[in-house]
Length: 121
Image (cartoon, rainbow, N blue to C red; front, top):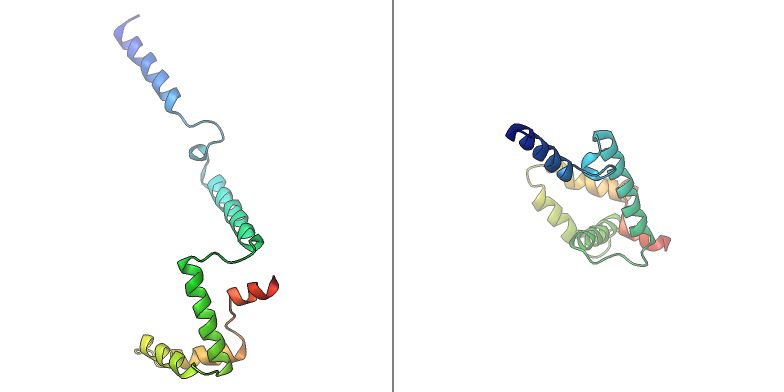
């Protein structure tokens, strides 16, 4: 066997050893990867819905506080002025946004996320 043939054979063996296994994630094409992620999101959302309570993650805590502020604003409960002040501060350059948010909250167009889930359980 010549040195060139030996190198070619070695290269083929190493390539085959490091090649992705059939059905592995790296062997999937773009459409298959999109489908994989779609199913993964569906499974993840189903696990969240099936959980007895909401996990105390930073995102869920922020969402719970947002739900509370939305409910306070929608019902004009005590503290609504503070919520309005925060909205006015955040959207200082766009003065119509806080009024729009309050109108949508009172009209039921802005929905709470975690409160609705807690009521479903």
